[in-house]
Length: 261
Image (cartoon, rainbow, N blue to C red; front, side, top):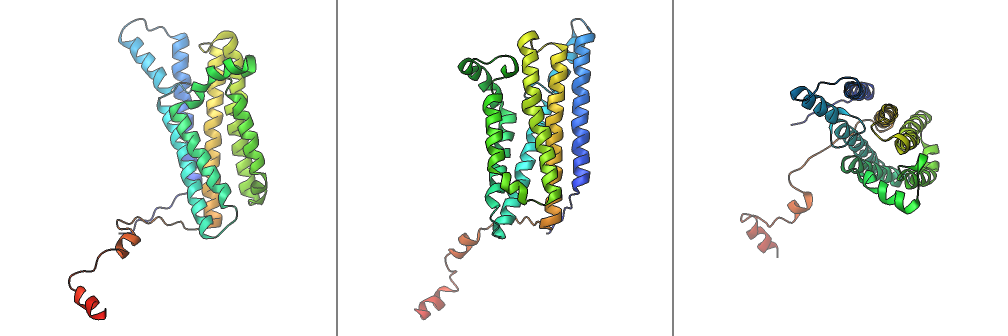
């Protein structure tokens, strides 16, 4: 049986954008309720706290975290598909597509496993950072982004103009939120803590920028695939060709094989 699925870059980007906007509004609603509503003790308070934990963008292990990790994993899968197509075409840029697929896989794992969050305190103690560098992971993070950009600069220039612009926009929005606005939230957290209303607003902007950057990147990848790769076929086989080739001859074919020998 053959199943054909047509993916529209614009439609998928619209769906992901609505999802990101919905999560942001839910996070804002939960934060406003925490700051300005006092349901007292009991069921209402438990429901309010559960809602905040479930949808607060700056929290971990909740719905926004799952969404972000899944979106980054989708980026990795699309990049891997492009890398496979480029390898079949013997394109010299295949290593760049492969490297980006690995990077986005690592970003997805980090988003779900909060690896960079675990590194903040040890790095802060080691580097003696404060203020804008209160979240000390931004130091190695910024260095990694710079090295990655330099390593892929020629590759970026070789891309079609439309794809190049979309990649640059996606990267600027994502990195601007993940590192730039993160530094601002660190400055606020160092002075007033993470429960401050201004901190919550800054953190919300940061997460929204990250989600927006990923949506733009997914759109850019699908648009590139549609314009320059055409149809991509995924084939799933229950029997590997090598295993089939090494299969022993059936009893019916054994006499013929012996006669030939």
